[in-house]
Image (cartoon, rainbow, N blue to C red; front, side, top):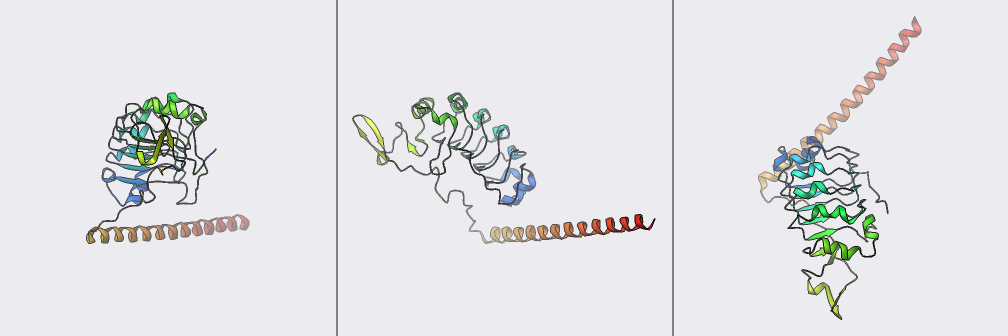
Length: 249
């Protein structure tokens, strides 16, 4: 099923820029960004995100991303959410050596060969290729032996699509019958609901600086809107004067 993308938040940014990253995080140095959530922004170009070399958590779900090349420099990235995009090639993720949790549900991965690029990620323990809660999937998931093939490619992962694998099984999440694993029908969420909530600092100075930054940012947006309005009015006035002169002639 084609994932529905909500473009009502912040408009379509299309390309990740330093301005977008700084406004979203409050950080002036891209290398200082450790946590980034850019959901449902209509992004199709990852732009300068590769400069955020210390990123640990990244949420890019619900966009229009096809090319993951800029992510290749993010060697400290441990959690990556790419669900509901248009991804068919995972090769750039080979160098994301710290990756532990990866959500790829709702993309266009067509074959098991697409997944081989992730085999070198020794820390990968949780991968999601389909999510029944949101009806997200990938073409590769249609195979009748889908789960068995994926577990063969990744023998060391602990969780696939929210269910524990045979290896690294949490015994409380399933039971054995006749030597086979019987999984419970309820799947664990990929991450907890509040996982992507930014944790505020207990430092009063940092909190005050953060508040002041947001206040200044708000004022800048208001000034920009006013300037745009004035420019529009001026252009309209000049256009009317030009038309009047033409009629006078």
